[in-house]
Image (cartoon, rainbow, N blue to C red; front, side):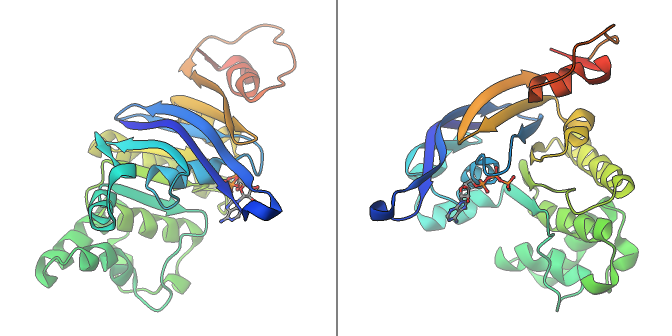
Length: 254
Ligand SMILES: Nc1ncnc2c1ncn2[C@@H]1O[C@H](COP(=O)(O)OP(=O)(O)OP(=O)(O)O)[C@@H](O)[C@H]1O
């Protein structure tokens, strides 16, 4: 479970007026779920995600992941706790001067794993994302979808309980988006990893998320669950995020 309690984060200097990016957000994300965070640009979605692994530390409030209060930890403890929280990004964040294997190996090197074990674990993770045949390539030789698979493999090396995804498909075409969503579903279903996805793509949320939280102006303004339902007749024109996801084509309902 990821539990945020009254978490706030602002940026900027006091004398120039601080910008409240996240304001008093309380949110629980259940183990094993795929949870979407949506909302307009600048709403604070990425900041909220980065608070979940303390890439941003909150000004106030508590962040508890897997029963551990990250906000009460020192640097060394936090580094250790972060191993059970993987993260992927829109721009993949691969090191261009390292091969695919070299990139996937990074978290294991940082964790001090011996070379032979490391090579075996890298193989396992590349096999899981279907990229074993690209192990010796450099990122520049890969497509966007393949780069994101490498990033997912890298995020899985330390067997995380949670995978945080910041706009994971926003640089990809629709077909590749579907491929990556299938990989993420596989991560969730076969490894039991809890997934949190920040996205502005409604089709991504509709395809993969069970729970949805809406952020606007730094605040959580709505939360709901998606499940299949029969089509509605003469549904009114969708307006809110909730209506877009629950009302479009009558596919989903609470
Ligand atoms: N490191 C930072 N320093 C200063 N301001 C920041 C920083 N990170 C984010 N902000 C500001 O905080 C607000 C929320 O940003 P955030 O990136 O979390 O929003 P978002 O909903 O993810 O937006 P987008 O969908 O455009 O990525 C924005 O006004 C942004 O400019």
